[in-house]
Amino acid sequence: MAKKAPLTDRLVARIKDNRLAAIVIIAGAALGGVAAFTDSVQKLLSLVPHREVVIDGEWHSAIFTDSSLGSPDPAQYYFQLRSQGGVLFGTVRAVDPPDHPTARVYAISDGKVDGRKVSWSMIGGWSHENEDGSYTPLKELFSGMLVGPDSMDVIHEIYGGSAVEFTAHRIASQKP
Image 1 (cartoon, rainbow, N blue to C red):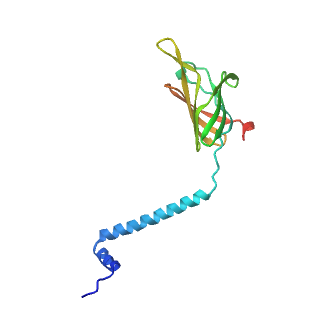
Image 2 (image 1 turned 135 degrees about the horizontal axis):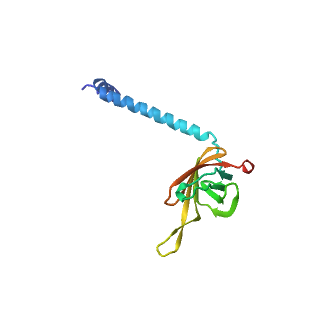
Image 3 (image 1 turned 30 degrees about the vertical axis):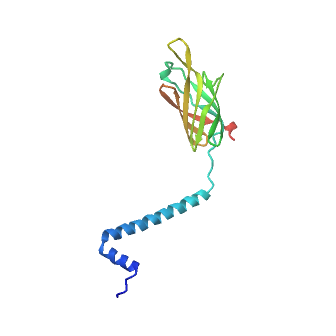
């Protein structure tokens, strides 16, 4: 009785006769190598300390106008922001006229920080008149992207209205 060839020899013989099988095996080996390399890079990057984005401090928006409100008057906001983990806390102060803060200060709710992205909402001074003559306060939404250590692009929207974009800058004396 003839001795049977080892399994590896039989597989090599079949691969030599089938190019498709050879390509599949080579591609699989290459993908395995890429996966191992990617895992190694991710492990190395996890060891590198990353700087946490700091949002804490007082921020002043640029002066802007919102034509959707039916008033060409310039407006401005001052933000007092503080983050803990991924949660954003603070207040929004209406500044009307610009550079003259009012006593209208509103608490931030639903505040989030995710890397350089921030978002929050507040119930401000706007309301909607209901059919029965009562009024429902409107939620104002803010979303921002830190574009530098002291600069943030912000989009402000009164619920159901159009969005207004402006830039806010951190006040130097308030920098943590």
